[in-house]
Amino acid sequence: MGIWAYFCATMANESNKPVSVANTFQNIISHCKEYGFIFPSSEIYDGLQAVYDYGQMGSELKKNIKDYWWKSMTQLHDNIVGIDAAIFMHPTTWKASGHVDNFNDPMIDNKDSKKRYRVDHLIEAHAEGLNVSGKIQEAEKLLSEMDTLLAKDDFAGLKKLIEDNKIKCSISETCNWTDIRQFNLMFSTEFGSTVSSDGEDNKIYLRPETAQGIFVNFLNVQKSGRMKIPFGIAQIGKAFRNEIVARQFIFRMREFEQMEMQFFIRPGTQKEWYEFWKAERLKWHQNLGIPTEKYRFHDHIKLAHYADAACDIEFNFPIGFKELEGIHSRTDFDLKNHQEFSKKKQQYFDNDVDPATGKPYGNYIPYVIETSIGLDRMFLAVISHAYEEQDLSEGDKKDSRVVLKLPAKLAPIKLAVLPLTKKDGLPEIAETIMSNCRPHFKCFYEEKDSIGKRYRRMDALGTPFCVTVDHQTKEDDTVTIRHRDSMQQERVAIGDLLNIVTKALE
Ligand code: ATP
Image 1 (tube, rainbow, N blue to C red):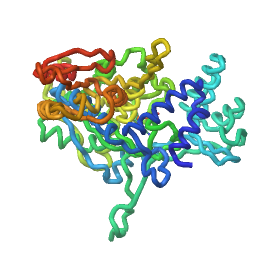
Image 2: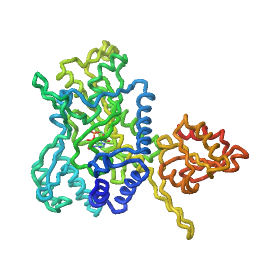
Image 3: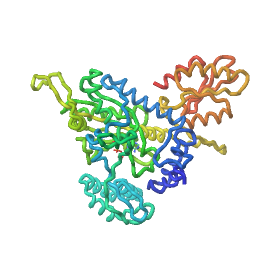
Image 4: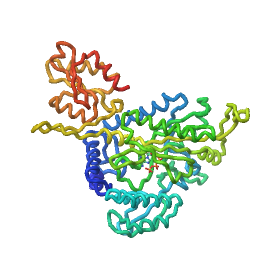
């Protein structure tokens, strides 16, 4: 079975969600493929699990999300600059960062089906099942016991919890479990074609996060950019994780993109900057017009090895509230370790005067607040919120449409230009509109099919505006502009088009 078929077949069974919710998610996935947003990777060979390609529409939407984030970070904050570090990094980076020793997830295998599960996901899925059947207190108790055991790395206790709750494998339906083991999520490969003369190991990792590319360039950027603390470095790039449970479409992929920003601060100020970035990031999401109820904060109980405070911004995906973005107070863990492993000082000289001592703050290793959002998860959040199936039937006249109510600034196409017919000089007028608007935003020209069908297709792609060129246009230089969400049409002068669309993109 191809990966797409496998995915669609297993979604409803494994999500433990009511059927209609699973159906909506499946419909979104099918829509993404049908309209050129997302395809399974190397589909002609039946795909590759948890790896996806973005199509002609998807890559535009993805790029618009990137631009929205990049602009908000690097243009709207004078003290944040962007970099683009390489995916390959010196292998010692990952020893210093703790990933070689700590980037593990506890896993358990079912002895009958041989299927491997991430322990927290297995227990969470069971708790969701309890929730759906109304056993809410039981579910809460299970999750809180899990959190306590995870925080202590008590694997024997976790296994007992799974057995006591009779949690079964979804394939074999048995409780025949192995012991819990740690599994490192980093991909590795060989660097270069020969073994080096000093016998050094050629093993190199595909970065599991973009953050380390920022840390190792902290001093390069600070010195070359004459940056003064507090300042931030932003980056967008690919990350790779050998995820075990990878069946939630682009929510959890093995190759994905992150948009991360590390904000370097004076030690002791981390609490206020942590709160600042929590508020700032939520505002960024809300500025897209997605309702506040779709988001919630989730504070981490078990902190990662580098953090002194951490939370997630969770989004209400069709598969429930899940992590969309992490905000972490990373202390000086990373820079301090890079200093130790590289033997190169990672200090900053702060000549601002400390009011407590009347002297400059002097040399220190900065603390860091990190904001880290998955670009693909943001894509899924945006598209699943935008997706609507509407029944437009009136009386006996059946009608419906699927519309993507994407924020105009994220939509792949901003304006569709549609001549009513292929003759009478209408295509020529449409082409003039195209050439006026094309330099300013992405336009699309279409003359095939009835106008109604063309509108529906643009709705499905999330195009906020369609203009129709008709015979009246020849008389008075006006066109009909149709608004995607309300489907309202109005007559406007061709000369006003550029303004109308540009205003909606602000
Ligand atoms: P999770 O608990 O869901 O595995 P995480 O806590 O390991 O995520 P972080 O290491 O904090 O995630 O990474 C920051 C962001 O990168 C996440 O909030 C998420 O949006 C994104 N991300 C992480 N892993 C993946 C993945 N496998 N596929 C897609 N996006 C991911």
